[in-house]
Image (cartoon, rainbow, N blue to C red; front, side, top):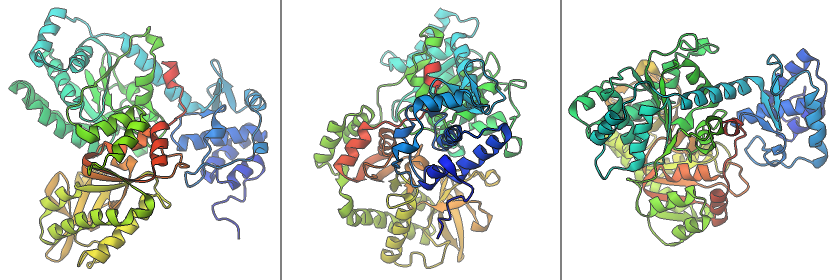
Amino acid sequence: MRDPELSVAADGLVGEFHALGVLEWADLHPVRHLSLLYGESDQRVQLALALAVRALRAGSVCLELDRVRATVTGRDDELVEVPEELWPSEAEWREALRVSPLVALDPAGDLRRPARLVGDRLYLTRYWEHEERVRAALIERTLASPPGIDADALEALLDELFGPDADPDQRRAVEHVATSGLTVLAGGPGTGKTTTIARMLALLFRQGVRRIALAAPTGKAAARMDEALRDAAAQLPPDVAAWITTLSASTVHRLIGWTPRRRATPRFNAANPLPHDAVIVDELSMVSLTQMAQLVDALGPATRLVLVGDPDQLSSVSAGAVLADLTHARWTGTGGASPVVRLNRNYRFAGVLGRLAAAVRDGDAGTVLGLLAAGDPHLTLTDPDRAQDALRARVVHTGRAIHAAAVAGDAASALDLLDRHRLLCAHRHGPFGAATWARQVEYWLRASVAGFGAEGEWHAGRALLVTSNQSDWGLWNGDTGVVLLHSGRPVVHFAGRVDKALSPDLLGPTQSVDALTVHKSQGSQFAEVTLVVPPVSSPLLTRELLYTAVTRARDAVHLIGTPDALAAAVERTARRASGLRERL
């Protein structure tokens, strides 16, 4: 019987790659259409273009012809061995692309062509344009400075905001906002990013700057930004603190006026810029290249831009690794004047988890394995063959407590317990995937917790994750909730709005939160985290994935995997093809 995932229309070279599981129909369809439209019959060109489309779906901005052989994965995110005879030689491949009617050449190529060849990088033209707009805009802002800076007055303001023992990096970041059009604030969890943003706002307030926009990639991240800034503002002078509490963060999409019905042109753009004197964007690691291009287009020429995030975390689900590119660029386009300020002092993560996060970030596999072998109960490594009992005990203990609170009608306790423990996975599907482990957790809870699941799908104690923005109810992608029973009917209470309940009939898309991918956990914190570490062969097993997972935990990290897999994760960095870093 024919594999239902295979297209009967795929033949020739692209058909071979399709049959191997490298290319999907979503990669083939645009290539077929463009080849017919431009009269391109060379299958080497068609293969390159299909792989470029596939690279975008995998998070890269372009296809690197000299590296593609080592990065080919299939439908289940597993590396695929492609027979050597199927690959075109690099020289022939490059020459076929150079003469193709589909491909423009850098720097003077026709932008009406759908692809662009820049050295060994093949772009879809739209993404090359996005990258160029971001590059040009950021360099222009880095070289710009707000008018009328009084050095003595600035120093006095900084002295007001920072005591003698203040973190010099935080002070330098706040000073940079006063003197430059672009500031990139980079730092890991607990390094004081929110405290620094609050002091940036205080300085701008003292300078008379009032039209300030706060934004984050998701609704949940925006809500966390609001909450964290209000807490940080309590340490500032009362008039400044009162003003900061009037600010409210939005998503980047809402800020620029993007809607699904107006994909091509957001409300705010180069012809109609945002009416703000400063824009501060948090959690930049989750911002894609396309979204970044829309943002810089929407800024007025004198608007100060502040970009904040942790460059060591996983990048956006969509194409691009903007924050990582910005923090690792040499900024030769600005004569070496870098807008990046990195915070290094950690105020939150201490002890074994702090040392673990630092060792993972620094690529020190020996220290990571040494910490795991030391026997600290807050950091454990369990072989996958012996993991079931320990993991079952953790999830059942938490699930039983949530169920009891839900049955008792105690929404506040049930929501607090949601953050006691979280099971994270690298993959979505397969034996190491969140979907598989979520089913396993559901089975354990039904078998071990009396009455769990008795009411059907919307049973008391069911933990939920919102998977799309639902602005009518003030819910955002990533919000979590718990099902309780009120007068025998199921209702859902959500974190941050515990006193308000919604009927399940009113909710949009949700999923159970028994297991999450590491990507979906970004920006959240839990008391304990268990990570299902995939095998060495998994291309998703990277330093960024491990670092993101372990920094979600406040008290304990439990890893299910082998020492070899942990060492491979620490030593293997994620590679997203992009030209932005070099072009800066």
